[in-house]
Length: 95
Image (cartoon, rainbow, N blue to C red; front, side, top):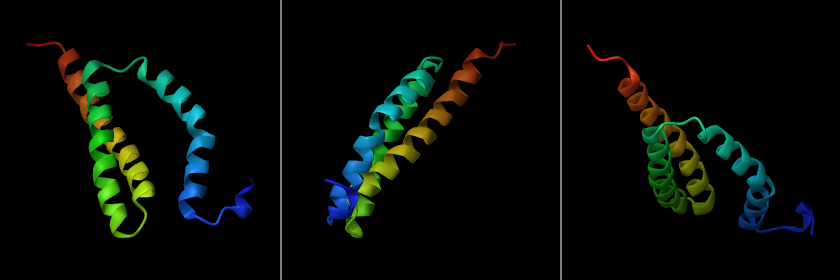
C-alpha cells in the first residue's frame, strides 16, 4: 500500500512514525550513552508528561496522535535539558 491510497490521516501518521522509528531509536540510544542520571530521568519524565498533555490538546483538534508525538518530543528535550543542568551543577567543584 503506498501513501497515495491512504486516506485516513492517522494511518499516514502511523506509517510515517514506523518508517522512521528504527532511526530514532538508534539515535536515542547513542545519545543517551553519555547522559547523566538526571538527564535520563528528565527526558523520560518530560516525554511522558509531554505525550499526555499533547494528546489531550491534540484531541481537541481531532489530532490526538500527532499532538502526543509532538508533545513527547518537546517534553523529552525539555526534560533532558533541565536534567542535564542539574547533572552539570552536581559535577561542578564545590567550594
